[in-house]
Image 1 (cartoon, rainbow, N blue to C red):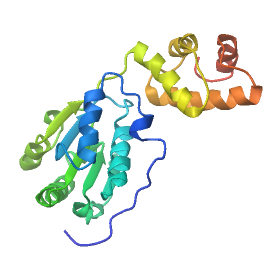
Image 2: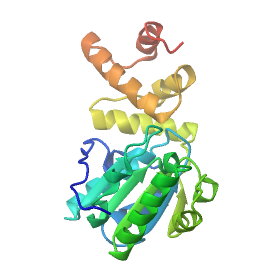
Image 3: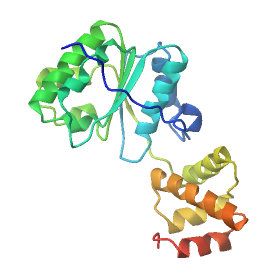
Image 4: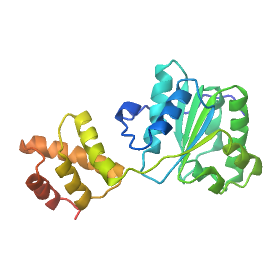
Length: 233
């Protein structure tokens, strides 16, 4: 693999472990924290449904690694794959986190490039954390040796939050943002709005701004009035 400076990535300031509501995933978070700190598993494969917080956790891993003086890198695959040359130099990082790994499946050039990166990165004793929407066994990887390697290490299935967890998570997130939301208000939002975590977090941002502008607390009447002006219903 040719030597060149890899792409740079920007840390997302509000995507640390302290900002993540774990629900029933505390053991998973402990594994990620140990690996990101330079201990624990050398390779972790994190999978779960979209919108569950995998990207947040991978960013959190990079934050923690950086705080421990380790070099780290985060890269999110997408349906529009870049040139595999973007992998050049990433094998030198102590920790690399690849998000949405399923998007490289089925591309022979990309699969081979990733296989080469994997071998070099691992031979240097560095840590690798991957995420996908399915388990490694279900990835449509065509290169047999790469499919085998993706099953190495620890595979963790992150569980979705229950409704009760989401209500608690809304209060947790609101507190981080500097305001309060009651369990009753949280339950109302779950009943009337999109229920995935990303949508709920975006809604909290809007509610925070709206309540500040109106100088009102997040009461049920206020929420009803606010939602009547939105596209959620």
